[in-house]
Structure formats: structure tokens, C-alpha cells
Image (cartoon, rainbow, N blue to C red; front, side):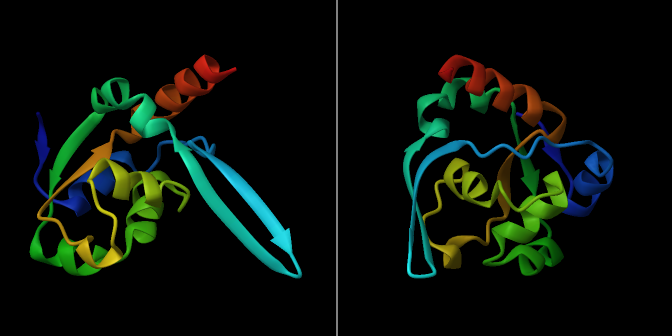
Length: 127
């Protein structure tokens, strides 16, 4: 498994990569009286874990990274992928269910230059 020395270095490496904004979970959306509820009921990560894990690296978080992203997977998703869509995926691939626990010294992330291919393969398999 490869490591990057800190999140700033990793973000600078991948900053200019384009990311496909497709969601990777099957969800049920309920709209009622101006209330919008999204319920995730099937995770493609769990279904395609072995395939996705081949495109994951570990990134060492320095103290500044830990403070920057503490309880903020949406910011990390936006910094890595240019969208907040993948915040729940970051939580899931790191086996985190509570935002308070989003303070890892080493975090698993999908390679931004592979995420489009990974998601397209998953979606093509689901069609």
C-alpha cells in the first residue's frame, strides 16, 4: 500500500483532475411538504469492495490535516474530488459511521485519477 506524506501534497498532485459527479449509492428520495429525505439503501462500495479497494491509497494526515478535516468529510471530498458528493463514500471506506470519528491519522481515499473509471465500471455493471 502506498502512502503520501500529507493531505496538502496529495491535493496538489490531483487538483486539476476532472471528476465525474455520479452518486455511488442507490437511494430512495422522499419529498413531502417541503421536506426532502434521502435514504441510502444499497451501497455500491459494499457490493464492489474488492474492485474499489484496488484503487484506494492510504494518506498520512499531519496534525494540520486532522484539524482541517475533523468532522468534515465534505471538505475533504471537495478538496480531493472537486465535489462534496463523495463524503459518505469517504466515511464508508474508512469504516466511520459517526462524524465525530472523522479524525484519522491515516485515511483511505480513492485515487482521484481512477474514480471516474471505477464509477463508470460499477454503473455499467448495474445497467
